[in-house]
Image (cartoon, rainbow, N blue to C red; front, side):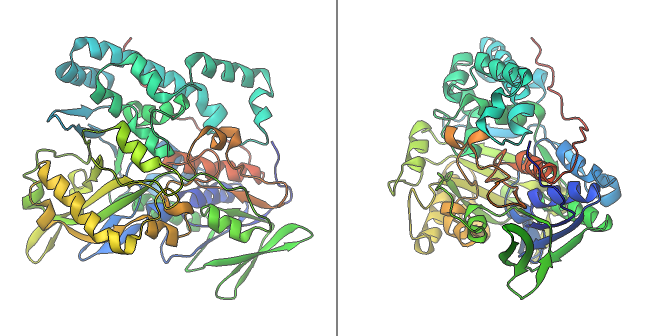
Length: 520
């Protein structure tokens, strides 16, 4: 693996999870580290929005593999308790509550015995046996690809066949059908259409319809449904704040409100970072974590255009608890599926301006106060709780809608849909304080207005994804969702560590979550 030699002074651009992970691993090896963040708070896509009397996560709400947070903290000799005694991370049970258009529902548990009982209740004992076979296959996919595809940098696609061990891992994935289609592989193993949705909707995180996604992305379903989904007291934003605190305590430098305007190069190698306020930060190397358009604007040559993932409309706000407590679904994460499935993905992923909004939306509702009651608050003498509603939608390449005019009517349409589905009072009583659309993400420098970066189609996966080290720009290393290994909280944490390794930080294996028993 190529590395950058002689780099001691490192500037990290961006204080999201990728940047903070990179900074902690770099600082833990003795590097002089400065993190520059354009916002006035850390977090990036796990930051916060302020509301009247409360805060709410502004981005990712689903946490898997929290041991990767521990790994980053441990790089500077810290742990969760030492950086923030209030940073409690708890496994959710169920991870999700899935509701379907026929009126049925399934609680999605990571514990195999509990999940087997749930599937037996809803789908029958034969489908429960099939679930166990699917669970074992998902675990095998995850174990076969984690070290070789997820926790790895690539200098070339030839890295996949560069050693006997690499060939063995590749052969194992081929035997498992990892380069087939995820939808087809899941359909072979389970028959109930509701369960098929539960174990394939995660492909949307990778920016691909389940029917088209590579089966290797069954690893995401494994993380969600077997390794577990976790909640964080104080919200996901607390993770970024704890990581930033550990960095500063270890001697790292954090500069907020610093928007990077350019990089300085001497002899073709980066030697400084300039900010819009006229400051210059000398360095031997830089780690860039923003999305593709921002990164390309800082580099001296153009890149090939990539296909962006679908985007999302997200409603952030609060609702009186006397309204929300009457809803049938009382869970941290609720996936409310529409009747349509394949058509929904087709509508969102049509190319070249032909995309459409979901005609029968499937939505994710997140109510963090159900796991962390401390997030409830009073306003005007009435108890409220934070609430987020996420609706996948086309990106701006697929559908260049005028979101300034469309946002409010679409918000009202989504709330009417939910009200009809049994969330009585949501249309009238849900106060939406922040409404994010593809236009929001585009204004933040995200490609095609998508917070999910480059879609994980074959040509943008693994060794074909944008590399985190480009020999044409010495001293520049990438981290974040646009490079390897890709989109998602665990993967961007990994990307930070991989970026640090490119800068000469030796790998220290502290272990990772083991696959839970599959009850064969």
